[in-house]
Amino acid sequence: MWEFKFYSRGGQGAVTAAKILINAAILEGKFGQAIPSYGQERKGAPVYTYARIADGPIEVKSYVYRPNCVICFDTSLADLGIDITEGVRPGSTLVVNTNKDFSCDAFETVCGIDADTITHEMLGEVPPNVAMLGALAKATGCVSIESLLKAIEVKIPGKAGEMNARACKAAYENA
Picture 1 (cartoon, rainbow, N blue to C red):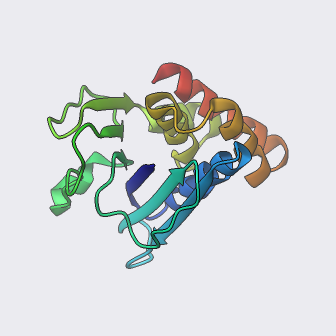
Picture 2 (picture 1 turned 90 degrees about the horizontal axis):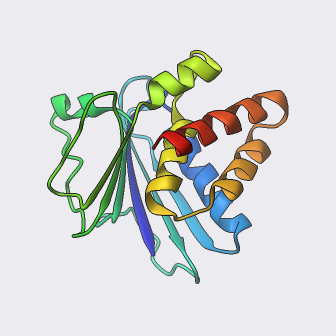
């Protein structure tokens, strides 16, 4: 079972990303949960979101305390004392939004993607969530890129959905 913990700030789209990820898993016949934790509910405040994907029913109904995949939308969260390595299992994967080289010994696999730049160049001033999902799909294989693109277009219909799907695919290819 994949257990994900998303670290972000309010307004970066992590809650929506978790929902889209789970919808992609369901399209593939898998089981999934998206569990948001809003906290202060204001733009820029730390937000934690959790998700699970499994091939069978998921019996546990709680936050994810021992993730095997961490998605970090904003590396400056460390300045607030937030430790993205907390509870990670051995062999875990990190998908991180950064335009710099990034390494962390707590993770077996680190996938850096400049999701902010991809998003701004392709979509304008919107959250980097779909680009982060593209990198996540590439780094983990937890869902196929095809299912992810379809889930994006279902969640965001019309031209905006098509554009978001293109940004997701670009991040997948660049991860």
